[in-house]
Length: 590
Image 1 (cartoon, helix red, strand yellow):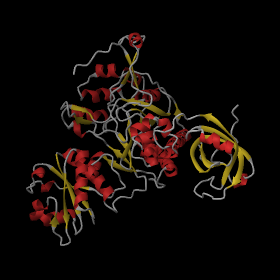
Image 2: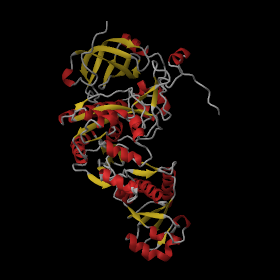
Image 3: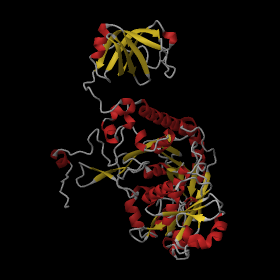
Image 4: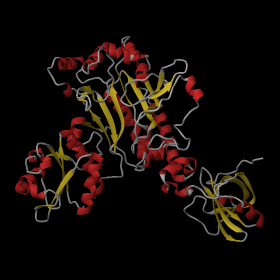
């Protein structure tokens, strides 16, 4: 019969010397120092305790076990002769009178050393994720996630939000990414979809009379992985407020997030309210990105007047420049940095430096020598300054400059205050854009957002009095340290404005009714103005933990190809299951 432990492996202290105790856990390590003498480290969820084997009987039991077997140890606590001040239990050890095997590890060799699992190949880590999670460093990220989610729930409840769960099986809806589809057995040929977000349901809750809603919502999107995005599923702090606008949403998150970041983050400093607000156009012009890292003090400047300097990549293009004062980067480091920019942005960057004599040197200096004085005056250059350039169509030049700015901020000493969390709001996103593939007007961000100017501004665009590309919307992103945590918006709750917004992208009233029947009809019964946002929990915890990959803070993540290699998903299924679902698999022609 299993005897419950009396203490955890992180609990015993010098004051417990002389007590008989029982501890349980994994046999992490055995160090033999004699025929019948060994030090055994036992690890549980809470920590480690050293067990000292001093008898032939106990030695036989230990030697018969592989590492990572689970055991129960009963014995007497005593003071250690050689203390370890780095461990909470470093002043004591347990001398066992009994060691019982609870779960035998049947393999002599492990796929990786538990405490060094993060050094192992990622595929191996994901395949044996249950072993990887035994590593305290990996486990601590999951504990952090639990604590953050708990703190978010408590904060939202304190602000009078109700936690309401919304359906997982729903209808397919055009929301920007690919749906995961679920065949409906009782309705041949029809499918449910897993929700990309609870967007429509939370807006329907507002029309139902609920004033403040939130949930830690699972979302499902069939999209490719990135460092800050996991394929398959992710979680967000989904929230919506009735009779509310942009400022109301901002006030809630500016009150909820800073204390959580300050308490649980790797860095103890976080922006206080109010967060800085930056218009989308200003963000692209000043930082080359709609998710700028404000810890970096570098800015982007327009230098398009130098497009005719004779350097071919500048000719006829928008030219952007970034000045780095007192830059110590060597030529080899500059070349490496610019190569990384090209890979990430898909566009080249260029450079010059101002030498000690005040002359231009390196990079594309020969094309700018004749206009050196103009360049120096325009950018305020001085000896030791580095200038990075980007060129191309406006969007490409801005995007490349944004990547270059981030790379330079990280590489050049003194231009980035890394140990802090710097929040900002990006506001006034364009309502519309020209689609790259269609070449026609499309929604830029969120089709359910309220346009700045309401119905009147849409009607002006329809009459040709203004360019629809000039229309902005009450859309906003929350950005922290260059990571987009969330998108949100003041919702378009007026059916008349909604119809007009969709007509500009060639979709009529019947299209809106057919694609969004529940929401359109609900709005026709009197909907309150409402607004919301949904910060990503996974990205938030990734920032708090100081991790570069989002997979480090997800208990059981998929790999980059959206495969769960531990469980073997996705997998084939039996023909009987396909028949029940009225599904036939046909071979794709190569």
